[in-house]
Image 1 (cartoon, rainbow, N blue to C red):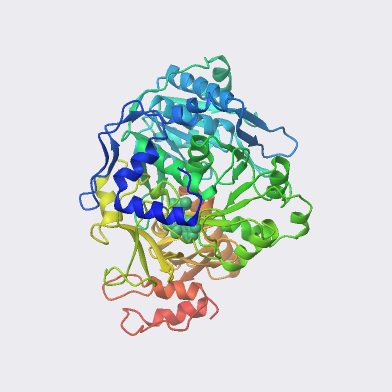
Image 2: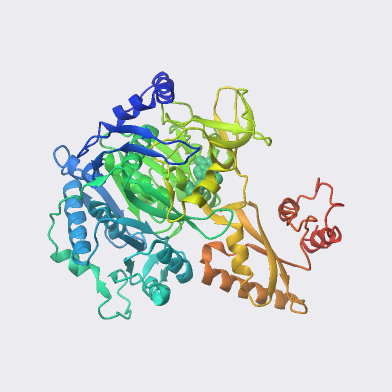
Length: 635
Ligand code: WTA
């Protein structure tokens, strides 16, 4: 169902709100189901037992692949652009992609993977990451992609949590000028993961890596020999499709579980309406399949809609900081979807890097992952879109499965720093500090969603109580997003950022508690507090306040530098390099309330170098420490 005017948008939103059963059964009927549903939606946010299209059966890959074989077998489905400019791209038509996925599914089957088994992918952006997740879906196996920047320990935690049977990795990955030893990291992780039976290795760099007899097998030779035919396994609409781990404000990462039918309908519907593609358009989302954006908007969304999707292995700055623009020019990309952090980083480079490429193919620009500041928005609009391309600022989350609030390209208006309107089916509410719904047209508060939508995560793998507690306990009967938002007179939303203890670093979600736990593993650290602070390129940076054991605090600058290096090493080992603090301040104490709670608000202000309005500190347990921390921060 493609919405093509603003009037249609308002009508669709109204209909989806008032008569969701009708609306979503119309949308869902565009897909192939093996058995029809008995009910469109059941369950609610009080019992937290949401189901969509219950009773129906399907296979999502028939909808991504087989369905297109009649109409567009020779259309390019995927263009894979390698890290290096000298290496040739690989393209797959829908027919070829279908065959590739079937081959991969046959390999998985031969190696013992069956419906319901969990398969972890720890790969860089090689084509087999995309064909591999689809191959799992073809068999009804559950994929869980772990971003290749995570450490062995983080990988092991995820493998154990979902009790995966297989890991698929690369010998090494290429990213810019760097290689990362993925197989070595996997071996380290597998030292204590009993559930893994097989490891498939996709050779990428050709580095020599140890292979464990009976467990490790090279992937490419198996694919070559496998049959390109593989029947799609029939699964229930509510059967699991994938698990994706993400950070929250407390504890260990949560494995959010997405199921099949509702996710499919949501990914397809949002992709179609937000991006408004024409048949011969070329779409490029620069995300990594290790994150939700790569699941919904490199893989499932575009393929469900028969689009051409570009998959990029490299980084925006390699070999030079014009790589994005060079690739747009090379493939005549029409729809370009990236993150504000990348926009800001590229904006800081010489404008000649943009000007040397022809960007006239572009029609629509997208932004995702964090609030986009006005300056970056204007630059993107002017220098990249040449003031001709609507910008879709898409707000959503791993938990939501797909885009929730965004303009529809060329259909509803784009406004700088505003995600604007909720998609049909999304009923946002703003809540004030007393948990009252703000009824006025305009206002500001905590962003909740009041009704189920098809793409929402159904649970946290293995821990439904935690799911209920995390998302549905702050406000009874509502899904709480963890974000704050404003709404203007016209009902358009402007996301202001997280209101919980999650930091958004370059669009990566990092839980402060996780970083603190890791820092505290250092044998000379007693306690730490981690907060976010404004960062020009990353959006937010990580600021860590660290208390050391008696007599172990570094005194000279050199000692401090060495200590910071050790802390970075600990973080890299436990979480991965993405969680390394940008700033470390050694302190003798942390401001605490009388009940022992750390006053993060004060720490956030000091990290932001803003000491106006610190509030009443006299009621703290240790008010004197605030002066010391201010001084230590050079304020
Ligand atoms: C933030 C990424 C403002 C937000 C798809 C959310 C955004 C978190 C936007 C989810 C946006 C994402 N404007 N903030 N357009 N998009 N966010 O799970 O804080 O990696 O809660 O999903 O990113 O991050 P996640």
